[in-house]
Length: 473
Image (cartoon, rainbow, N blue to C red):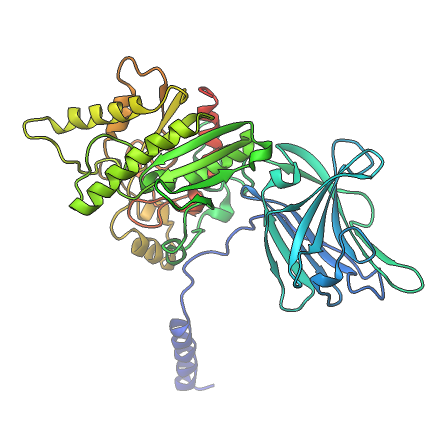
């Protein structure tokens, strides 16, 4: 090959490389349980299982299976002839004590049915599980996501085995995954990769995971569209409530989360706590409207709407005396309308105190969640550029703690004498060092915009929030 041709070839390869889209992040680590692959061993059955996945991802359980043949939900009838079920075992017991089956909920819609079993395998309780279910277009796969308490699973160890049956002739075709024995599993406060998110800054031990060095989960483009942690609407009338945590039938405590949009982004962390402690939670939040007696510096219509919301919140607590613990948070540094001649700081502090004192005495504990640091205006651009340059974005895009962290006057109010029922939880150390605050922590993007946490990062704060509030509750 002559020199001119060789140069042209190298130039062509370089040009193609430049034109290809740049990868903005490393391959993300595996989140969630791994599949258990099964060999063909039930010929003639469309439910000859090829793979089954069952276990925890985040705070939820994921059930996923793929079969050899096609099937319809209308063909499945619980634990009868045509069925796919997961049997759940506790401790060293050799007989299953619960069963989760895919069933037809009518009109060919798939659902999950839970059965609690006695020591002889007889069902003593049957109910439908609230789950998010998606069917594959291939008619051979299903995924269901649901909370552990739906299957009466609490923190700790259990084991499972999947089984399918089909009415083949002359005798039913059956399959099991695994073929021998059970899969050992565990329910944790949060199931994520090692050192994921806030866990990478655990003060109790140094945690490193090389797979997370160049990871950014979610990407900045995905994060900006991500909603806060899931919350089931309870009421669309003021003060607009939704519910998180475990279902009411198994809850041992009822709590509430109150405040502006910065309270709402803490719901991801509180969901972890609620699942771990068996709590039912109500979320009462309104953008731009913290739980305070000070009028926010907003246009008149929004200011009056905020006042109505605050009055409705006070009435709501009177009607719900079962709520003993309230979590509050808000955007630190938000402007308020201060009466002429009053000092802004002391007026704002006293306004928090007045609002908390208006809560009925049935509220025994108020936990102030110290507001989170803010991101720089161009944080998402910086993160993308750092990844393209193969630089670690948490360091390349860090900003000073002084710029990121605003004084939280609710914390100052909580530390006033005589506020014995008010406690403070400050998790700043999981986002900041003594000098810097980071846009990415443990492979997780901290902010979805300038001031709000991504729901994934908020969830990784959950185990540490659980540790802190265990001192008070």
